[in-house]
Amino acid sequence: MVSFEGKTEEIGKIVRRYEKAFDVTVIFFESKVEFVQTVVLKEKVKTNLEGSIEFMACNDHQCLPTRTLKFSVRLE
Image (cartoon, rainbow, N blue to C red; front, top):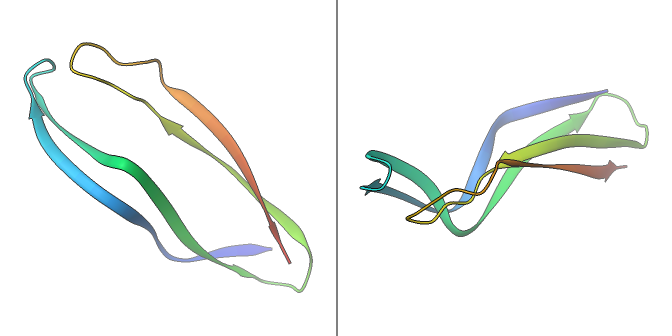
């Protein structure tokens, strides 16, 4: 019923920084990020597009457990 057109676009300020606490270079979005994906309905029907996003938040001492949030978008 739905096809994805192109790649998902990330809109936000990407930061790459070496973190001594973890001894790695981390990549993250500062403050907020929007993920934009164009979808095409193959038929003229009303439907929901459902998915989930997984994320983690860290500071210079620890990371919170990974969280997964589900979402649903009504397509008409």
